[in-house]
Length: 218
Image (cartoon, rainbow, N blue to C red):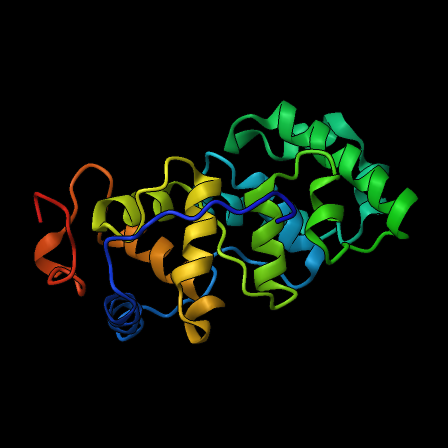
């Protein structure tokens, strides 16, 4: 990120941070649940996943990927047919609008290719910090730590970070996460939040990091 980084103090010591990731890694396969086979498909899938489950997005993209493979394919399809194709996942009008605008930009500015820098990605329509970092992490192999609602919740609930915003949590996680876990940290925390450290009813009795967690109800 280009903005000045602000340091926050995690309540975890470096050894505890290392142990937290190590214990999560023993039970979690840090792999994406979205289906994609190219940087472009990943970018579209992540855009569609906003406020929607990966499972629902996969059902939609299973059909999209049969005929749509490039930005030009989406431009040729047009916004209204795309809206209809993605109607089941919600916010279909806004998402379709951003996707068509994004595809035009990819064609005009990047010869149809997905750029591999944070600055270029976030300049695209509908692409925010989280989306850009997911693409950089999963496709380009960069050690970014995208912070979605799951990562933000797990970070705060455990005490790993008390930074006030997703962007600030991202900055702190990038600072305290050991290098060997930097690439997988996002999915280790995300999947832990999705399946164990749930928002409404965390399954603390099944938690692999319960001994480290600072949550008062743990």
